Image 1 (tube, rainbow, N blue to C red):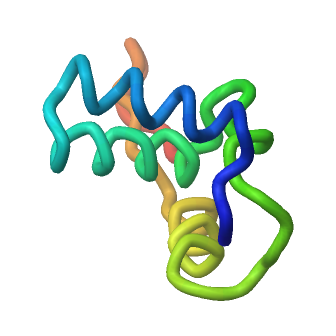
Image 2 (cartoon, rainbow, N blue to C red):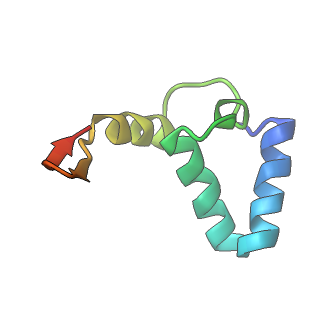
Length: 73
């Protein structure tokens, strides 16, 4: 998927902060996780590795420790 103008800015900022490779990893991890505003960073599309990663992340159940024990969210 092609990056939008705002996506290019965010990627450049992350690469400046974390370095070239780690910046890319953080950028795509933010998109997959659904960080606020990240839906505007990538162009239209819905296929490929990024879309598959989003679906996989959404399906995972996360184990959260509470005062009563554990819960899954």
